[in-house]
Length: 243
Image (cartoon, rainbow, N blue to C red; front, side):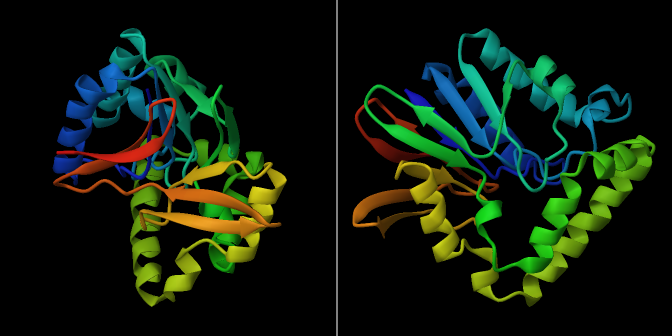
C-alpha cells in the first residue's frame, strides 16, 4: 500500500490539523509501505535550524513523529511545496525522509505515476511564477538563510499574510493549473498518471493528450476536522478520509 498526501499546512495556529496528522502517522500510515508527502507539509519553513529552537518545539515534534514512522519501516518521501521549499538535509536526516525532486517519476510493477506539488503548472499566475523562480535560486536562499531565525520567522509570517491577501484579489483560473502546460507536462512524462496538490481542488480529471487518455488526481488540502489521502493498493488508486 502506498499513500499520497499534500497541503497540510501544519502550523501552531491549526491545532486540529496537527492532531489529525499525528494520529494518521501513528495509525493508518503504519500499514503502508510508503508515504509520499507532495509539498506544503508545513505552512512555512524558515530553515532547518528551526528544529533546534529552544522556544518553539512545534517543528521538531512533527519531524520526530515522521522519524518514528520511518523507524517503523515505512519509507517516507517529502517534496518541497510553495510554502516549505527550504526543507533541507538536516530535516531529511532528522525525519528519516528522503527529499524528492519535483517532478518525480514513480515506476511501479503495475503502473507509472508522475508526482508533483503542482504549483509549476499554474503558469497563468505570472507574479507567483516570478517569485517561485527567484526563491529557488541558491543565492536568494543563501541570503535569506543568512538572517537570524527570528527575522526569518517574521518574514515568513509577513509573506504568508501578503499571499493570503493577494489570493482574495486573484481570479480563480490563476490559482489552477494551465490546461496547455498540463498537457505538455503529461506528454513529456510519457502519459503517466499525474498526482499533485497545491490547488486545494481535489478531483480526478481525464485528459486526452495525443489521443491518449491520461488521469490527473488532485490531492485535497487537510482541514481542522479531517484529512484526505490517496491510496494505491497495487491495482487501483482511490481516496480515503481520516478524522
